[in-house]
Length: 240
Image 1 (cartoon, rainbow, N blue to C red):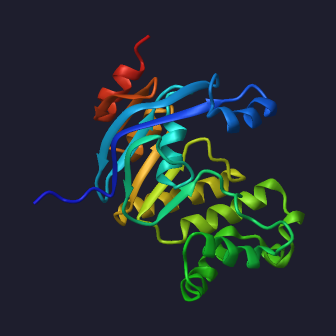
Image 2 (image 1 turned 135 degrees about the horizontal axis):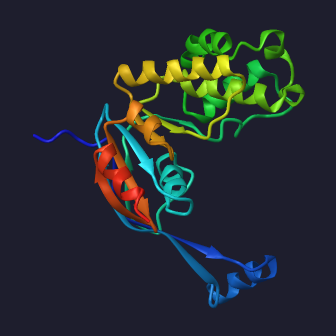
């Protein structure tokens, strides 16, 4: 019997409406978007990812990578087709999203935990690991509005990486402070991969993808151009 995929896209299409201005957006309410320019971000994307796989997603800007990630994390929904995600997702993308600026770092651990669907007992269990990993010292009890952008990202990363996800979504562009902390983050990601967590890694770097993944999906103009080995995907990606 075939193993059930942890992520599945079936003929997924995503269309965005491009309003010229707020006046057109308001008018569209009454005209059912007549005359509004449309952009197809995804044009019938299908793939399956199985538990424990590490898959790279590559493609030039505008290929549809961000749209796919937003659907996996539940931020966006398809215009047509089906997206199925079976498991808890930790997304190392918008790390500071969901923080309350007036709450302390400690209070935000619980707030973010609730937003990620954790119970009080689950948050309390991982709280020491988050505090240790973020390494913010006494600032953990200060309002987040007093944090630098780097400190906010450290806290966000520490929370997301410690929620024991089934699926980890990583963006290569992630920047979380100094070189030592980046090394610490990379080690933690590798630990999760070894533990059997399913990983989606978005990058333009063949070396970075090859180091982490055995499979890659190359997107071009909203379609899957190649779904195969890292070598096969980058061979096509490199063509002019």
